[in-house]
Amino acid sequence: MTLKAAIMRGKRSVYEDFWALDEVSFEVPVGSTFGLIGSNGSGKSTLLKCLSKIYYPESGSISAYGKLAALLEVGSGFHHELSGRENIFLNGSILGMSKKEVTQKFDEIVDFSGVEHFIDQPVKNYSSGMYVRLGFSVAISVAPDILVVDEVLAVGDAEFQEKCRQKFIEFKNAGKTVILVSHSMDTVQQMCDKAAWLKNGRLVQVGEAAPTIQAYLGSLTTGSV
Image 1: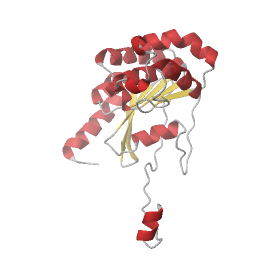
Image 2: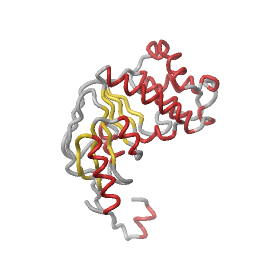
Image 3: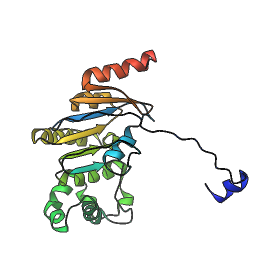
Image 4: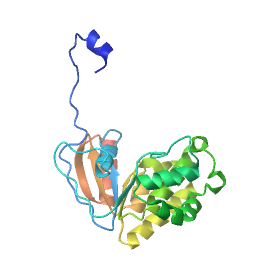
């Protein structure tokens, strides 16, 4: 509470508790591509932040087996005044890579991102699509066992989305796990084996992707659930 608010309200704090997630429980199979779907405000992004240990749940627990890398928002972990080159090293270190590891993978990261012509420019001059491509390229270079990705892929162009789709297939074939949040049901249908549908912070349905998506879309037209 700010000083102004305290004075205006006679030092009385006025607020209402809001549970972003409540009674949400499910398992993500190893080696699967798992989608999180639901309307805005359903708790998807909050859940991803809990999985990534940015937020910690008030109760319950989250167990993850293996190295986890997360790409939760455009330019997360980037410093606007630094160049793309400098941010690769910065973001790589945040994700747990040594300078030697980043140096070894530098050319691969830049090549996948497609921003080689701008790699020495400050990222504040990058478009949102360039941000996403570079951030995603660094995240996958960590070679995580679990990759957590928010809606950011929607910013990329069709060519980059196809590269990401191929990378997800490579991850799956290598026994890696991808957890993806998307408002694009086509993307979830194409990429995900299983999905969980959240509404108002609660789990409505979890299981095979196709029937879960159909149930969610059906609720939008009927207003049920």
